[in-house]
Length: 324
Image 1 (cartoon, rainbow, N blue to C red):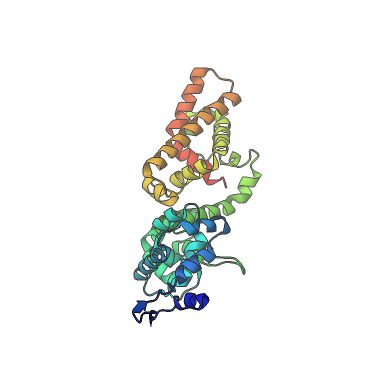
Image 2 (cartoon, rainbow, N blue to C red; image 1 turned 90 degrees about the horizontal axis):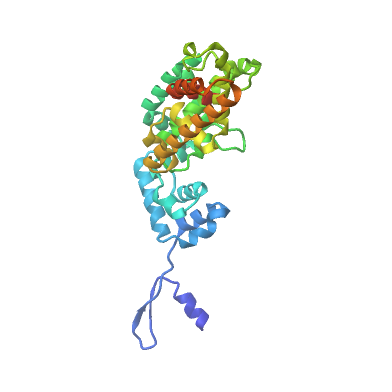
């Protein structure tokens, strides 16, 4: 009898109580989005989903925002909730709060091959694509060729693999993610073109770039050129990977402090502090490497280090561009 009553309370209907009074029975609340979200979560963060408040409503709001941004690219809510979960990491509550629903919808539609998605992507980011391909036109390819290379990298994949656009996690703007991905793609293209020359260089990754490094070589004594390039390379290699990546995005990728903050999901002041700290660490390491390599007095070393610092952005950009 108690079991039957428990089942009855799960039906959405009205009944009569023992005294003939009508009672409202409890309804089962459907949570399809939450169920899809939890099922698709990485195992490392799945346990944290139990503490999320109003998960179904929050997922529905994200799906509605995504649909409003791209109504011409159909993607059902269940699929979208699973796609959000597949990219979730860290604090789930914070991840959902900062999820760029419209951008994630577009990236997901492109990754899944939704008809018209790539064309919509190209229209939406036309100005960015034009600027990026123009900037790297020196690689020996025209703009249309560079765009095709980029699109192949972003939207195609080997069997059983996901296209690179799937790496966009929905945090920060897709525009900034695209800029970073494009710069990496074009630098890789340039590196493949120059690989025979680089491999022939006797001094490793940057030894063959002595003439290309934009430190003002005419102001540096000939015998110090190799030491300067080697010191910069050594200092760049010694930086923590995250700081080196941040510097590369700024100096090679051309991202502003605001864009770096958006890409990494940090405050712009934090991004600025990390950039300043990385530059200071790199200059200190370069001076130390020059001191080890060169037998010169302190005054001459100080002058050489000052000259390197004055052209650090340009010269370091070349060094970082050749480092994986």
